[in-house]
Image 1: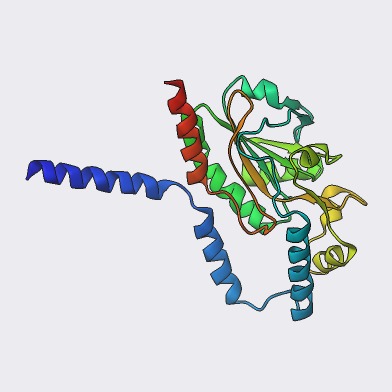
Image 2 (image 1 turned 90 degrees about the horizontal axis):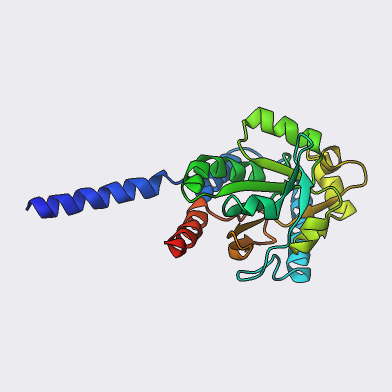
Length: 242
């Protein structure tokens, strides 16, 4: 009987630990429910234009992102405060969780970053750090870091070179830019004048040899890699060292 009780307790403890890992999907569900209670700021016509743009992007980039098993392209980018960060140098410290996001103007990016923040301590258990890349300017990233107390690197890919190497780059159409701006999402105010490209949101778990061990990149910008999946990949990398 005591053994049975112990097993039940251990199972309950494991379930509790699993439940403590932040969930992006849960945040997305809450956001969606909240949105349904208020009228959409986008008109029916605008929604259709955005939907068609999404379908077109999915057709032109059916399989975005550097794949598992491939070498992650090295890069050097400046963070929000002017310090240069080099991927190879960071990998000498441990695995890297590399996340590409659209910008502080994107609510889905902010939700994803929020759950990642909650999981940074778990990443660190496996010697890993979180590094993010965005096309927005350094001053916008600095504002975001201060506002949301980010404890990770936010790098600006101002010439889109890294987004292109990771196969995530695409240009927003003038029609989509106009719809976004009309509804309070002014991409150029974050990226800079005439800078209208974005990355497909992508997450890459990279081991110390620079190899991609897990990834997710989808043209549907609402879909993001769960912290649990990142942690599972880091656990696997860690076990291989034992």
